[in-house]
Image (cartoon, rainbow, N blue to C red; front, side, top):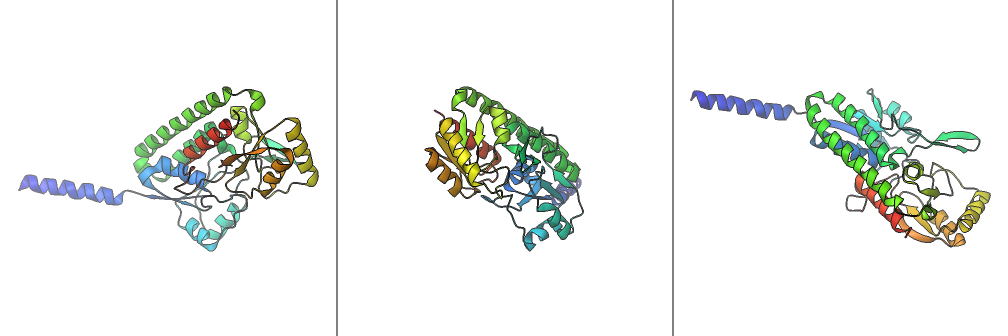
Length: 292
């Protein structure tokens, strides 16, 4: 009876600990960050993405339900670098008092001149090396929010970071095998600057870092001329943007469609880019295959 009593006490204690295990309520600005948080936190996180699959983080307009989601968050994660211009107002309206984690902290940023102003490129995660920096920052934030599960969160985070670094090496090797003269493509907007710098690919686009920017007639004419001069033969649409402008430019320049890319938003769960890793692999393979 004494042994049975001890076993019962131990079972109750273990059951109590399981019931007390913390599930962190994480809210992220868009799907790339949501997937990173899931990969790092595993069963210890419940993740909500404000911008859904195939959604545009630039032009997103928050609704009351987004404010409610933030008000119940333990951790809020953004990319930063000017990506989520709507987030400060939403945080203020929601009453969220916690820290807003900036996942891009520590990346080597790039910028461009636009309308006489220097603008930081916010699309840093499109380099897998930068993606590993994002994952590290997210891991530290989740550990701080749930120290009792730190060993498991750290293990999940470090395994994920290793996979992203391997993806980075694979992408470099993939593009190094292609003559540099072929590594030029046309996309809808300037979202692949970090990708291009990391993997030696030149991207041309009719509009700048934000999908809300407007291309002037002279800019479009100059781009068409450049495409013809450099004999750039392939264009890509992006899952979160209106493809009509880039298709018009491609028609005028003679470029042919190369497929759909996922620079800012993941696909639905049953799509080809349901996770950050899947999206990155898809983008690399789709772009590289067009350069044969």
